[in-house]
Length: 116
Image (cartoon, rainbow, N blue to C red):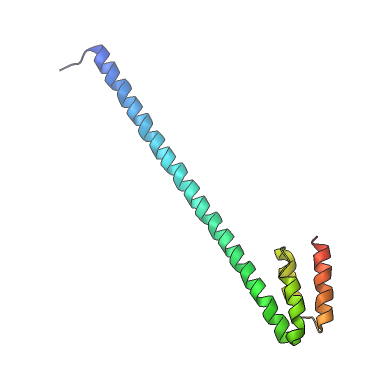
């Protein structure tokens, strides 16, 4: 049985719309999937950076206490006020070589100036 031309054309047009809608849905799903994966990746990177920062902030007071005893407490309070991770990271690295609390304080001041 053959359909009238107008009805056949209408059905073909409707089928094209369905295909376009399905293709658009697949594209949307693909874009959503990409965006979700990107968000997850960025979230992991931020979480990792925050974890590293927290580790550095917890390590500095321990190293100061081990190397300089209670005298390092004032410097610990100063370190807690620092916001720049570059300063904290380089300061922690420099503590390996600091032979006195004064040397550590001087190096911290130099780092703060360098990164301000």
